[in-house]
Structure formats: structure tokens, C-alpha cells
Length: 401
Image 1: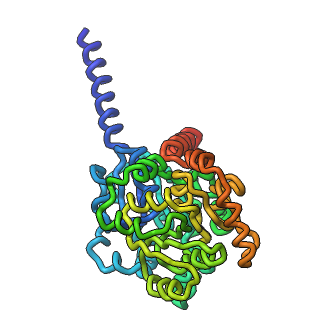
Image 2: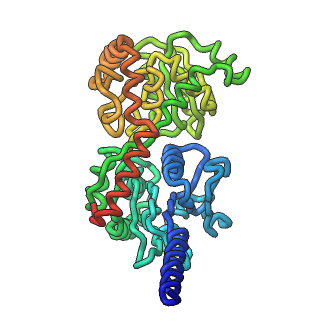
Image 3: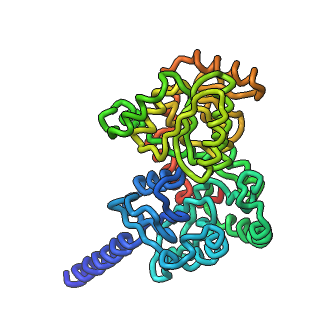
């Protein structure tokens, strides 16, 4: 009886220790850095919601209001000038990610949300490095694709890329699995890193956009007044005011179609866009730094969203479609996957004034109900389901993919 009791206590002790080890072993989520606004940050929040017990590690956060209630850990870089210089960060982070995770902690897995170097992270596990799952918004554009990002065109960036490219490719081989946010990015992952990947489109909170669009009471007085000044029929261009977003093309489209244009956003190109608007043959209205409620209202009221940037995915077109608003886009980048030509939007094939006018006229005849239902394919719930299945399959079969 004593021996039996001892064996029971021994088994109980081993189980307790295993339970304790299981409690200390969990996943880790890493992200480049956290800003107040950004598509990659929206994805990060969805990943964190899918794995609420996994801490989030980031070099620094400029948005303490994001991920409230979640365990967000910042590195020592948060207390250095690196956080204020993206070029300096690009030089420092490849090494920093290798040493950012304390060696005394073990994790069962790590998900790296990557658009620069977070996939370089080295995370200790029980029997060596923890399995690494990389969700790729894009291989670093200004290293691999300076044609898509002017930041990679200067001499310093070109010099650094000659060193960083082979390192980036080598560390990408460490990933157990890689997911791309679009087929457009999947192709770039193949050509830059030589790895296959699974397409998991980013989450778009289509239900929230619809709720905001249907709740004008959430608008402030100034926002209501601004809406009253905007004509009933208009084309919308919305994004950060930076050159590659091509918001000047939204004005060009408005001129070709003889329709007023609203530009919503903010950024360094505001002065240039205002100068272009002053010369335009149609009225151009600016809505600076719109709240989420204001942006949703603009989506819902617009005749169409003009989105001609070449994006890796492009969340805004899906948000606009969620309110039933069709999209004028190019058959390039993420919009080639999210917009259905002739059903949820129109692809510009002829970029002459006559061709643009014809495309807009077709756009204005589309039924808005199918446009709205199509957006549900990119919902947050769909993203979470696919992400969890992708990670679980990778942990189960252990095969690289």
C-alpha cells in the first residue's frame, strides 16, 4: 500500500510538473513595430485575438492604445533613437531580432508578423528553436522591390540591400511555414526567398465598418458639417497622402468622368495634392485624418472608391465594398484578388480619358448588394479560422511549407 501510495505521489508529482511546464510553454507573437494606423497592425490585432494567451513582442510601440488588455512587451530599442528612424531600424533589427527574446524562456511556437525583419527572430523552445510561423505582409519592399517603394532607391538603401538580401533569404529558410497576405506577395516570396507559401488574406472588420456607416450619431459636429458640404454624388480616394498611393490619379479619374472627388487621409503629399486640386476641372474636397466613423460614412456615400495604388493586399477596397461601394482599380497587386471585374468593381484597362470615363460609367451601373456580400470573404472570422488551421497543421506534421 505504501509503495502504491508512493507511486501515486510520484505520478502526481510528474503530472504536476508537466502541467507546470505546459503552463509556462506557450506561443509568442512578434511584430516589426506598432503604429497607430496601419494594415499590418490590424492583422497583428487579429492574430493576438486568435491567441489571447500569447504575449506580443515588438521592438517598440507608438500606439499604447492598441492591444489593450494584451501582454505587449517592448525591447530595449524602445528607449533608443532607433525607434524614430526607419533607415536606422533596417540596419539594426536583423541583429536585434536574434537577441530580443530572453534565453531563459521557452515557447511552443512563434508567429512573426513581418514586413521587414521580424521573421529573423530566434525564439528558444524546449528542444531547440521554437517552430516559426511567418505571416508576410511583404518581403521588405525597399530592399527587394525598390521599384514599389522609393525608399529603396537611394544610395544607402541600395548599398545596405546588397548585404541584407542574402541574410534575409537565409533566415527565411528557418520558418516552419510561411503565409502570404495575397497571391501577389506569394509570388514575391518565391522569387526573393525561394520558399513556397500559403495565401491567407488579411482580416477586414467588415461588420464594424457597416455598423459605423449605419451610425451617423457617432460623427462629431465638424464631421457632420463636412459631409453636408460634399455633393451627393462623388468619387472617393482614401489612404495616406504618400506618392505611391496615387491619389492624384483619383483627381484625374474625377476629371475624366466629370464627377467631384473627395480625398480622405493625411500625410506628406497634402501640399502637392492641394496644388493639383486647385488646377482640377472638377471640385475636390479634402477630409483630413478622418475618424473611423467618418471614413465609413464616406465609403457608404461614395459612388465609387478610386484605388489605383499597387498594394500587396489593400484593406480599404474591401472596407468600401463592405458598405456596397464598388471599386475602380487596376488588375495588379492585391486588388486583382479582392475585386471581381464587372461585379464588385471595374478594372481600368484603357487609361485614356475616354477609357476612364467608360470604366466609371460601367461602375455606376453595378448592383451594390453583391458588392457588400463579397466583402464577407475577407472577414476577421474567416482569417482567424484559416490562421489557426494553418498553425495547427504545421505543428502536427512538422513539415516545411
